[in-house]
Length: 168
Image: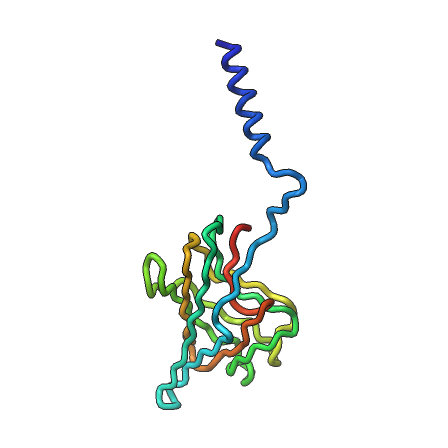
């Protein structure tokens, strides 16, 4: 009986050793998917005949994506983000984010204030904002809409804007 218990313990330990990552594996490297959105342009101006502009961002997630898929906004230092409130000396406006095609469509999943420098049109340092995380699915689409009076605009590029991060 004791020999069987010892054998089971050693077998379990060997199995754990085989499953452990090797020193050459980097688990801190995330994969990123760029949005199909070329640029963010959300506006809420009821004083201009109810001008209300919103943006949708979609992501095609590979079938082999593992772990949670995180909706992020990432910008390098000195990146231009136009925010009408910041341009007038105020704080960045809030932008509501809803999930378009998830388990509960049209549900609010977060509110974000994009990092416009005060005062000035560019970020002062690089920034990464995690808006929310979900189970990965093949198609992930989010709707962005100004929650306050004003507008926010920026371009999505290969290294800045909206992304899905996975396999971190």
